[in-house]
Length: 312
Image (cartoon, rainbow, N blue to C red; front, side, top):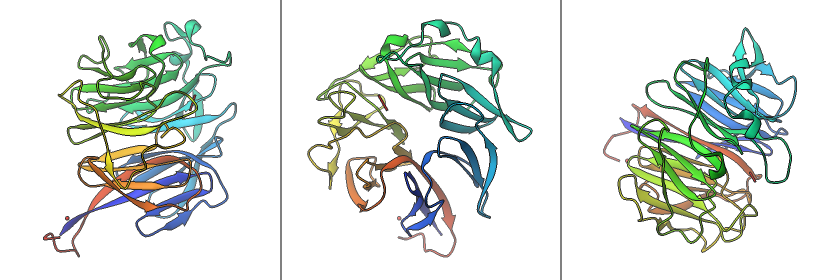
């Protein structure tokens, strides 16, 4: 018996599953993914949510207004982050605007650098069911009650691009480097030690190792992937293996995923890289896909295999 890891890659031309290269939803732009047990959820063409429970992708609900950016299948239900900083929840086969989020404290201060309306950019949940919602630009809000109420956490000027959780820790990629909180967002520590630049777009946790992208700014010039142990501030180091010296665009929100010591990430150039040593070294496993928009990893036990083997 052996653990098998599948890479689910959302692209501008459907979903690709690696390593076998299975395609689905061809001809659609798949913007985001979320996994919950055996179920897979996807945002398609920024307009609808689909679910696959092993019998093919089926419609869940459509987005009536605006653009869907991200989603999470949480303990409290299915939430979808959308344009104009709306948070939607699936109820009875419909996606409805969550009124509690519409009246969240500090909402009138949310903004974008170019003057447009802010977006919900990423969503996360910790082991206890606490939800975290990243608004760009509006910081990270926390809900301890399944979305009934929301509390602002990090300063909105931190310009957060992705939030995720680790055991007893909330972590985020920001325009000022890596941010972490061990008290559910009440206080935050920032770290840029070892980074060539602080503009970070994507972050994940591989066992006890942070994996984060960083570049010189929104256009992604001189973009690279870094790693450090969660408990060792100031020690970011460049990931190695079959990686170029620099990527020409940002490794974006949602495009780095980890489970255990396995890490995968995708790029705008349609490349996917895989690591089995907590991002110390990577191997390129695909180079001809459509531009990658999201990456998710799932692992399962294969009893037939001998366990002796292993946006701005």
